[in-house]
Amino acid sequence: MRVLAVGGGAREHAIVEALTRSGADVFACLKNRNPGISRTAKGHLLVDENDVPKVVEFARANRVELAVVGPEAPLELGLADGLEAAGIPTASPRKDAARLETSKSFMRDLLSKHRIKGSIKYAIVDDMKDLNDAFHELGTSIVVKPTGLTGGKGVKVAGEHLMTKEDIVAYCNEILSKRIGGSATVVLEEKLVGEEFTLQAFCDGKRVAPMPAVQDHKRAHEGDKGPNTGGMGSYSQGDGLLPFLKRPEYDAAVAIMDEVVEALRREGSEYHGAMYGQFMLTRDGPKIIEFNARFGDPEAMNVLSLLEGDFVRICAGMASGSVSKADVEFMRKASVCKYVVPEGYGTKSVAGEEILVDEAAIRSRGALLYYASVNEKDGKVYTTTSRSVGIVGIADSIDDAERIAEDGIGHVSGRIHVRHDIAKRAMLDAKVARMDRIRRGEI
Ligand code: AMP
Ligand code: GLY
Image (cartoon, rainbow, N blue to C red):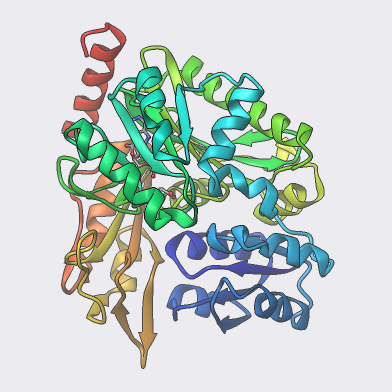
């Protein structure tokens, strides 16, 4: 089958590899010269991924029969709608369903209207004079978010980024006056305490088929310090759970995602595509932090590297309205993904620097390699301001997978930065101990 894949990061490289493994001829639209994608695809176009008419034209010209969109920005601009209008079944949500990610106020109101478990206290403010009512209702132990997309950089947490009530007021004012995230609306939420995890699911409009749970690490530096980033690395466990996440808690998160898909269907916005739930595991079970209308990055590298089922059939099923559970099979192995990023990533990346990636050596250590936001020129690989290469280890235990990923990383060099602490035993044990204390009510 001829399949369109949109996007040029490591998430999309993983998507392209999984499609190709399942027999597809892939045609890719991407803005950077990602050597992993351009080499694997049968054809590709360097293009602004948000240019809906150009992407649709490329898809038509290459007679693609199915499409998958990696990033969220083109979904907000109606790329899935445009592809479907051109008769191309698309395994990514249309603009109205993608509001689950693109409008945090829509998401919170949907959960509240349909009384979905995992909802939290929130207030939507679009006028400064309503802020006091929100404080009255929520207190000041809160999280402040612009409603729209900000590339993961708009969320500020009281006690971390906002130290006083005055800071909260000032940030709300800034969001409203500068229309941060594209509109003058602020979402205030109660601040949750717990351990975060990601649950992704294949959705066909009616049901969800869940994938293994993953934990991402957003902070740029070891020990979860430094600025928030797109994600520095992630791991998953062989049984689909996480060291601190128990089966009933995983099941509760799946049930929440099922309810969300049903709520969207009832609202007339059927959700077709991968859905990403970011949860906080609290003393009272999993609570929703946010939803994304796509695979996670890096989380896609974990789950798609483990996928044994036929990804093309799964995508066709998501688009057409029936994913067969028989296709959704994952290896019962652990995965660890670590991102190699440019020095300074999260604050000021050193972009345009050459990095050396010894692909043969990485493979010989048993690691997988996914190129991210890099550019290839004359056989050399150059950084951009974003993440560079994802290295994945797969093994029976998280510890072994972590060692394989580290072995692979040893064969990437240049002005790079890596969080070596991700998925190391000390960190995993600390998370389990912390979650136990939360469950006992000690934190
Ligand atoms: P987001 O961009 O929505 O993923 O948020 C970025 C980070 O802010 C998350 O990974 C959480 O660590 C934190 N965060 C967001 N919402 C909440 C919340 N309601 N309570 C506690 N932390 C939150
Ligand atoms: N890993 C975070 C994201 O994909 O949004």
